[in-house]
Image (cartoon, rainbow, N blue to C red; front, top):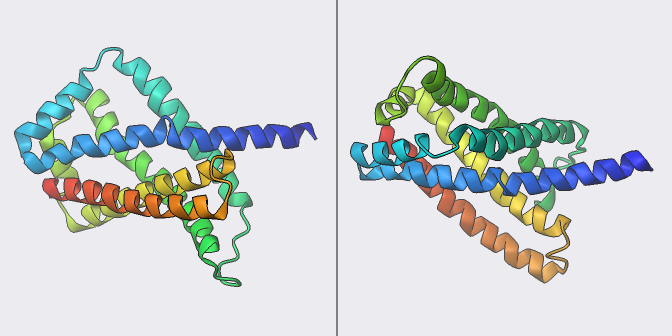
Length: 204
């Protein structure tokens, strides 16, 4: 019984961490990257501001990396337990359930790669966090395609996670409220995907 209570607590914490702070940070990160559409100088100023935030390492550890690791690792555990039945039933919600887990796994791998290509290179190899760093990363078609796939997966996982979060936390109880928030989530998916893809194409 106790383990069931613990699992319920961890799942709710996992749901919350995907929205705050992980999802909020992702949205801010996409918007910062979107500054690249206004040119190299605009992006470099935005990136410089983020790099030189006060208490940067504290914020990165407790607002980004620890919540992200918990959400990612526990998410893999949840995905391994999931019983997907889309091929048998094919209901819309079942597909959303299936895609939530698939995009979560893609996002987890993508974020590890992204951190390696950016944060690790900046901190340990003395590379500057600027426009040219991102331009070099997506300089070939394969890397660009992988980045677009990763961005769209992260965005879908986040916005569908908002929809399930509202249900899990008892905020949208009625079918009507769930349908309305589903439309809102879809609109947010389109908007954030546009921002993310437009931003990464600015480096290509």
